[in-house]
Amino acid sequence: MRSLPRYRGLALLASVSVVLLLAASSASAHDAPPHDDAVRVVASGPGLTVGSAVGPDGALYVTDASAGTLVRVDPRTGRSLVVADGLPVQGAPGVGGPMDVAFLDGTAYVLVTFVGPDVGGTGINGIYRIDGHGATPIADIGAFATANPPATDYVVPSGLQFAFIAYRGAFLVTDGHHNRVYRVTTSGEVSVAAAFADDVPTGITSRGRTVWMTFAGPVPHLPESGRVVRLDLASQSAVPIASGARLAVDVAVKGSDLYVLSQGQLPAGAEPGTPALPGTGALYRVAGDGTMRLVVDGLDRPTSLQIIGRTAYIVTLDGEIDAVSLARHGGSH
Image (cartoon, rainbow, N blue to C red; front, side):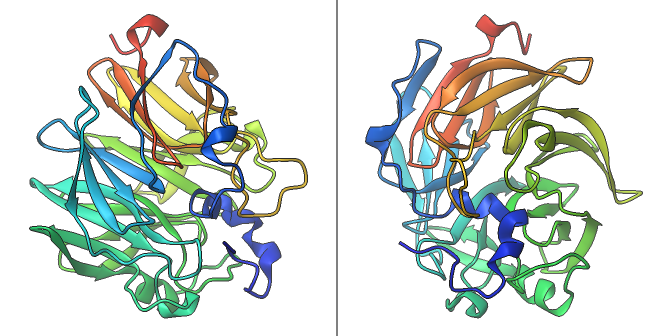
């Protein structure tokens, strides 16, 4: 499948290589190296999975961009069940669809991106509320982004929204193409909460009023570009916490520890939109001195991270969910 070459000015997408998480991978699951004994496979499937969240029932909820579905996964047994379908998929071939899931007041919401008219689709780029087994759009982020373009260079007017969280009765949404964080209300109001340079915001999490976020940085995604920051909404700025995770795509907090997910290393000379090499992803714990301490490596193109109890659950691009014990690595007491 093609990804983004049809857009004029492709070079600008070097700052948007989060698309690699959506593009069809040239490396199949058979190319992935075997896991070491630190990683337990909880579930696997043919889907193109990106975002995840822990639901009110303690289960994992994962978006499948290829099928336009939201899937519930029992973290103990790995049993999966489609709980919502009919979400828009892939406005451009191989790119787009449901990206992430969040819960607000017990209701599931799904972030959908790259499905609008500017990429050849007919859907709405924004947030959808899960109603029963279907979904209802509540906010058109793509329309806002198009009407209010960023100061940084861009190719796709509607942007590329990557991840979101529920925060103080509304949502915070990262956009890795427009280098922004949006605040979105349940009534559909969209505003810019923060804007950045060529940092490529990806994962986001919070506890209380504190918000953390990962920056993937531009191609070639050097380790020093992969950072975790604290988002200061009052000043609309990012406060550095740590760096060293190549192509940082997500962050999670547990107890006094922050964990950062690295998707891995790009092939030499890779074009924007190319997935990381299989087996080069890693999970890090942020140390008090701002360095990244390796928890486990050899992960196959991970996309999102959740922590339940003392176990990290890692979703990968090709539909696998891996479990890593944090207790054996000295974290999350």
